[in-house]
Length: 528
Image (cartoon, rainbow, N blue to C red; front, side):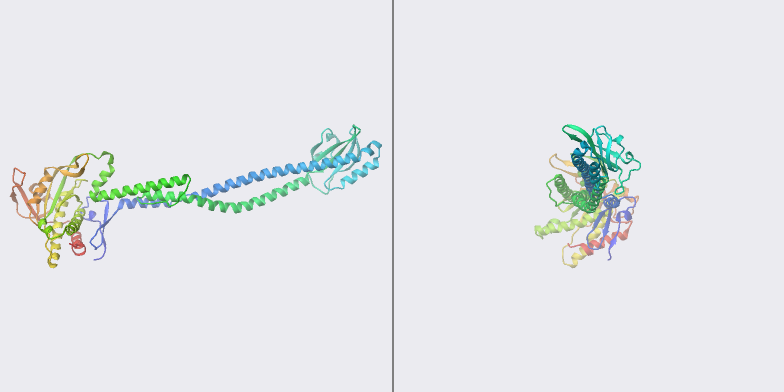
């Protein structure tokens, strides 16, 4: 038999919507996938595919910006300091030249040696860093000059120095060796025996200072570009490295959110380390919770388990009135069977036997309420409303009996004892909920309809499916049943006789699917 993927719920009962798509491989087992969960995962994958700016890039850019801004501030401070240092150096140089010249012209100035004054000034202006020099008497009258000088009216002789623009110089002034915009004047008085006989003025172009400043700016720009080319890639790498723990946290939260388990192996001593430890603890607790839920679904039907988990804070004794159908199935002669087997063999036999009955129940939307020794109690329409609950219960019982008929043929060929099942079914009003004490309770259904189903099972013989008349009348209006003639029996606990029918067959809506199920269980999965 080839693999076959079938949604039994939509094929057999189109009016009933199920969350489960059954995968039907011929290996004696069924697996199911929660379609709603799969859809959620697809939605998450779509969200994950949306473009977003990685945090590693953000961190890298932030680090780069901080470093670039830091370097810019440092460069600005260095250039400002360099500029002040250049100006200070130029002023000191001008003060030295003016002081030396003032000392040299003291004697010629007081002696009236004009020629000697001219020679001294010409010698001073031979220095390329000096654009002009002049000597004034104590009444600020020009005595001698050489080179380029500003207009005398602009010179403040009471100040040791000042800065002048190019427009402040004579129109015919020229300084061919250097282009400049501003000039620095340094003024030194000529003093002899505490008497001021005149003033020496030295003009220095700021072009040399500005050239040195430009060179410094160029050097700083080149260094800054080289540092940026080196630092930005390193910052991006650093940002990616710093974002790894955050990325692992994102992966962990996504895995936990999708129901998976994720543990972060990183160990850190900072706040991210504390967050990693919290995520790991949360994942461990959720794993424990998931394991508890899985175990709970093994102990209870899935519908009941979900209700209990969803309402943990309100779990209490009590229930609700429902209209449901209950099925009891009991192994005939189990006492004599257990005498021939060891306790371990009895356990293995029941586990295997009940696993196939459970598959029949799930196929028809039933849920096993409890195992009572060699008997099972199955509910239909108790957890969720099902308009086909009566049909589902009867069809499930017929499939159980047909499965055992095929199984017993195999067992007969193998020389094993046959296994017979008797089944009682009833439908009606009952209370579904938590029954027991505050310390120990279980989910089940109680009521006269439940008790009658149990009595009908006890009255049945091996291979029989017993219904009460009212259930037969209700189901026969919609579905054709193959039944024996009506019988009247006295049921223990009932004051009036009960009219019963023995169901031998039912008209399956999708017979081929039922045949495939039986073939799969008998020929590929049965190990009894």
